[in-house]
Length: 344
Image (tube, rainbow, N blue to C red; front, side, top):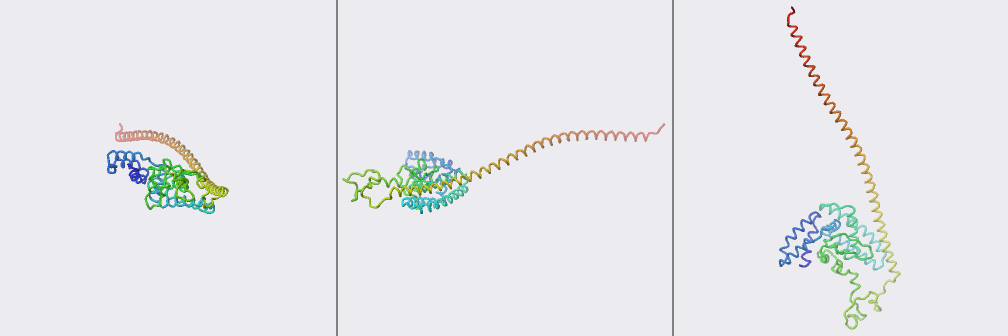
């Protein structure tokens, strides 16, 4: 069976609440009999469905965005395209503006992921929220990553260092399904797919090289892959930026990335300080409660002993009082008898 059938089954599974995935996957594997053409194909597809991995919580949160708020991921992908254009144009001012816009967009997207996760039965922790933000940041750095997050079948979080392409190995449940993400949703085209296909930047660098007169390579030989600089040769039409300009653009990009990293580190440090203070406060409160509990338990033990002694004493005094009342009755009866008996 092809991946199209598997993708059609996987998509709805990865849009389910986190706790329902395993049971729904098992049920889906049992229902593939109506999909396959032959018994062998049905068995093969059922095995592929059963093998679909459960996503990490961060990947599931991103899948919730793809299923319920795809416009957010389209905006993330579009911003990534704009940032790449600014980088190619060596426009440092535009790059700084877009970096600020990215910070705001990612913060808004993480809040939306928080809300969607809660609506579907699972709250996400601060660590998971950070992983969601890193994944969406990677989507702005690499078209392949943007396609992966829009697929709705993400399996793990992504990360980008701003230099290398994002590693998408094993990141999507059905390789290639991201390229066919719902038509009309603004998904990244198939040329920007998960690794296993070339990223757009690589594709540009390995296009068949043409001579200055066009129409293929010299002598009609099949085009061969050549380094970019050798392919350009003397047929360059537009001047390329100098090495210094490229270095300056790289410096600008590195400064922007460093500023963002500093801001993230500052937020993380603030969260750590807040968590540390809260932990210390709660630990002190627990110690105080334990001390009070120990005191209360000791007081309860003493009170129980007093209660036992008081109960025993009350029982003894009750018996003594009863004996005295019987003696009183006997004494009164004797007096009456003596009073009614004439003296001789």
